[in-house]
Image (cartoon, rainbow, N blue to C red):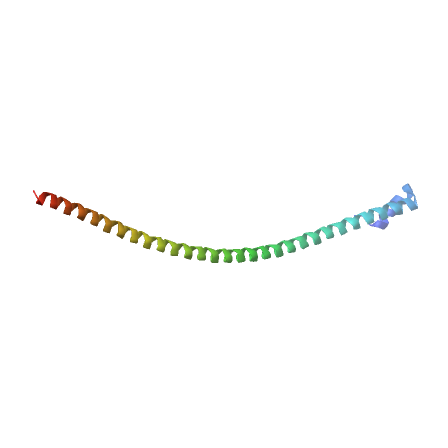
Length: 121
């Protein structure tokens, strides 16, 4: 690959000294700008990756906190529901007992009434 000096020497007779120098300076500046732009892109990409990793860590921590809070709330709701279910069971047993006592009393009354009616005849 030719050096800048060799290229300058080849272009000087065809373009002239000032034009050849201007062209090579332009090309050299363009190459340097591209290299700088590429470096900037790499730094930006690296910075974005780092920021993404930090955000991921923050989000994971927040998710764990929310999960912990939700677990506690679920346990509290479960405790309350278990207590209410137990109370309902007790109420059902009370009403069931009252129903059967009442049913036995009514049947006993009917039986006594029938026994008196048939015993008297």
